Structures are given as structure tokens and as C-alpha cells.
Amino acid sequence: MRSLPLFAVLLIPDSLRAQPKAVQILDEEMNRNFAQLKKADPPAYFLSYEMQEQEAQSVTATLGTLQGSNASQSRNVDISVRVGDAKLDNYRQIRGDRPQFAGAVSLPLDDEANALRRRLWLETDRVYRAGAQRLINIKTNQQMKLEGDDKSGDFSPVPVVVKYETVGPLKFDTRLWQERARKWSQYFADKPEVLASSVVVVGQRELKTFVNTDGTKLQYGRLFARIIISARGKAGDGMNLSASETFEAEDPSRLPDEKLVQQAVEKVHKKLAALLKAPLAEPFTGPAILSGKAAGVFFHEIFGHRIEGHRQKDETEGQTFTKMVGQKILPDFLSVKMDPTLHQLAGVDLYGWYDYDDEGVKARPVSVVKSGILENFLMSRSPINGFPESNGHGRKQLGAEVVSRQSNLVVESSKSVTNAALRNELIAEIKKQNKPYGLYFEEVSSGFTVTSRRGLQGFQVAPVMVYKVFADGRPDQLIRGSDIVGTPLTSFAKIAMTSNDTTVFNGYCGAESGQVPVSASAPALLVTEIEVSLRERSQERPPFLERPKASTISGVL
Image (tube, rainbow, N blue to C red; front, top):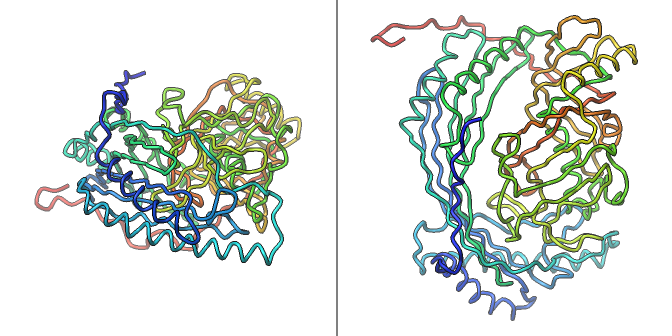
């Protein structure tokens, strides 16, 4: 394992650090506006400003040429004004009607007080007016319709925190990454199977300044870095196929070396070429193994979204687990936690870590399931029955409103065997069920789930590399065009055992509050029954025109 440098977030004791100027400006303007708003009709009882500064640099290359090289810097603010009181305010969700007041208003990049205050003043006025109108609508709605089952309030108290952290500079050697991206992308240039391909390298620095009328004052942030290698092709029957590899790190300096990335590029091509030759999948129900990455996405989709706190209160949600606290929902050998304080697991940098959530609440690990028993939900400052406090999982994308969201999901098992033994158990299960084969899901790309009552309460996970496993010793056979489908409670009941190692899936999760970075970590799972359906495919044939040949004009290959 390669040696890792120190984290880029430098912690300085508050006693040795003066209040940052940005904190001072935001705090003063917030208090000035709040003094007037709490006397308004209806009155505001809470105000917060979250200013986010982003610096990003990226390089994109394809077929050995530079396709883009960008640098950007921005500063935006989201403002939250709560009107009414903590028992009933303008953020209450009424049967699927979700509030939207934030707007990611652009701010000057410099800490120039007058310019910042003017934008804050105007935006605060706008958000208050919208919030006041919505509170009136909510009260009218309550008079006309039945009250929901959850009669908890709309906002919970949290400890006041004052903390100032600084984030090291984004050290992104643009020329170096351009050279490497060109080199890596060149590999696809003479591969006839590849219709389109790219190598993207991204570095990002994020600094957040947060103040609220409770007294919390924070400045904190982090660095991101990512390499994305992708290639796309089209099978003879029209099916669009793709393969990819990604690397994530806290800092560009922690991304892998050239050799490892080159190996990943070659792996992407091999996967795509194999998929293009693979036979189509067929509808199937039977035993299977999900690799650790596939299992992580599986849990993120079918479980993680259903234990987000706001879904337990929303009458339009399916509320699969709302009344199951203290009950068994998973096999007793499985436990699940969400831990945004984890920076690394199994030698991999995790994407879902943070120091404070987007409501200024200190991040902390949450035991969600212990030995199969449901213990907790993921909570923002919006309380629900039995869970009156936040546990640091109020998250959002810039310009969206906070709801409870996942962070670093970690599945742990007390019934584990080696990968070889797990495969033997799969073969035994195939024979026991008298199935022609079982399945091994090596890699998945994404997934989605339906949690609303109007939906089917189902989920779908999109595998990339799926193999038929035969009990008679024949080599595994790669197939294409299958999706994992099912419903949560039925699927959980089919988990039989796990492997004894853990792998990590990093990515972004999209939901009501936008895109947030997350990770999902799990051992491989043996399930006695899983259902796959056929994926929709395009009716367009591969390109009719012959592929252009390499040119030597002007000495260019």
C-alpha cells in the first residue's frame, strides 16, 4: 500500500485564530436582518447563512487529444429563514409539497463588506417573503385536511458550535495532468470497438462558512480529487454498452500513479470488448453472489434511502421501516452504520466524509442496524416520532434545501467466509435449487429506488459485469443486458452469508436535496434468490459508415 500524506485540512485551535472576516460579515448582517424579521408578521424565529466557496480545475482528454481544460472559482450563499415557531413553520412538508427557498445566490469573491451585505440583505428579504407565504398556505391546508400520523414539530435544538478550520490550497498541476490524460486516452484511439471514450481528471477545493441565530459559527471544508475513465460501444443488436473505472482521493497528490491508471485504462477496454461479444441475459430468478461494490450499491439503494428520517414523516412515502424500530429487518449476522467521520476504509479514500453537516451539526457515526435489529434513522434537524434530535445527517447540494441523507454506509458481518468458500456455497445452492446456473455480479454502475406510496416500493440496480456460474465446473460466462430488480423486505430475507473482506464504492447520490458525495462499503453477499430483468435496448444499429483510418498528414498519427 502506498504511503499517504497528511490530510489537507489543517486544524488550528480557536484560541490561536481570530474570527475569519467572512464569518464576521455574515454574522453581523444575519443579526441585523434577524432583529427586524423577528418583529415581522408572521415573525421569523431562526435564520442561517451558508456560504460555499468552490475552486475547481479539470482536464478532459479523448483519443490522445485535449478536449477541455477548465478552471473556475465561485462563491454562493444559501439562506434559511424559518417563520412561525419550532412546532409549526414554513418548512413543514405537506403530502409531498416540499419547500424550496434556497437559490445559490452568487456572491463577490472578495471579503468586501458592503458588496456582501447588499446581496445578503436582498436575498434574506426574498426568502422571508416566500417563507411567510408558505406558512400561511400550510395553516390553511391544516384547516382543510386531516393531520398526519407524525405530530412532532418542525425543528429541533442542537448544541451551539464555534469552530474555524482552514483548508489547504488546491495543488493541481494542470500541465502534468494534461500530459497524463492525453497519454491514457490515446490507448483507445486504435480500438475499433470503442465509439467514444474519455479520461477526466478533476480537483476541487470547497470551503463553507456557516452562521445561524442559535450562535453557531463555522468555517470548514475539504478537497476532492477524481479520475474517471470511460468507454462506450454498441453491440450488433443495438444495445448501448459502457465500461468505466474511477479513482477518488482527498487530494490530487493521493491519486494513483501513472502505471496503475494505465492498467485501469486497459481494463476498461477489455471489459467493453468482452461485453460487446457477450450473449444477452435472460429473465432469471435464483442464487447469486454480489461483489462488495455491488453489495454496497445494493444496500445504498434498497436500504439507505428508506432509513432517511424525513421519509418517515412524509405521508406520501412508503415508510417501509417507520414502525419497525426495535424489530429484525436484516439477518442477525448483519449490522449497518453510517459514519461521516471515516476518511478511509479498506485502504480506499471515502467520498462521503464531512466534519459538519449542512445545518452546522457535528458529524458522528450512527448505528442504524445492530445484529439485524433496526436502531436508528438518519436525522437532520427535522424531528420525527421517537427521534427528536439531529444526528448530523442534514445534507444538501448548493441551492437545495436540507433533508436527511446518507454519508459513508458500512455493512458489517459476523457470518463470513473466504471468497472461495462463498463461491462453493453458491455452487451448492445452485445444485440444491436444481438451477441451470447462478449469477455473479462483479460490478454495477448505478441504481435507483422508488420510495413513494404511489410507486411499487421497488428498486433497480444496473450491473455492468455479470457472469453465469455453472455448478458442473464450466467456466463462468459473461452476459449483458440484465438489471437487478425487487423489493426490500423480500430481498433482505434472502441474504445467506458474506465474504470476509470489504470493498468500497464511491460516487454521488441524487435525491430531493440534490447531489451529495457518498460511499458504500460492504463484503460480498450470497443471496439464495435474486431476480433479474432484461434492460431496454436501443433499436439503432452500429455506425453504417466505415471507421476513419489513422492519418499521417502533417506528421500527425
